[in-house]
Length: 209
Image (cartoon, rainbow, N blue to C red; front, side):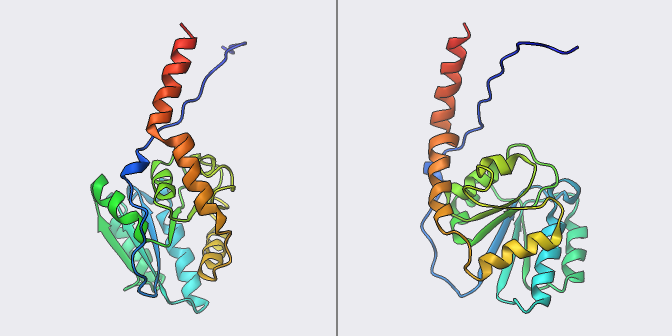
């Protein structure tokens, strides 16, 4: 049944950005890419990131690494994609890590990629933004809203390996808009900070009483 004149209020999920480190490590000369989520490639799309990186290696880019943080049923499949893409030695499956580990180490990376085919909010994207790490996400899913539809990070076409590779290549060449990092950091503090989201929730709730 279609409901008319229904006014819904959307209240974003919140994180605690003050707990997330932003200080950068000393560079070892390698460009470090990270992806944080359950290893479930039909939904999270980790194979797209791997295939894109394999494409970049074929183009002569060899000074990068990729770390996957998380566990799940696709581990063995993703290892096979890593081998097929000739990325052995460049890809690390770090397994499950607790929140404190992620908050302490996200800032050590040069790019956070969320290649999800299906994704709701994308909490880890907001966490990467709070760590002042540049972000690249797939189109048409929750993370695209988190980065304000390309205002605070870059978007590649969902499921498109070539487009994903092209956007990563832009970062490897230093051609990205570097102002996005500060914009993203401010967006998290002003919109996805749990102190703000709780207040907004309570304010909206009181208005409906």
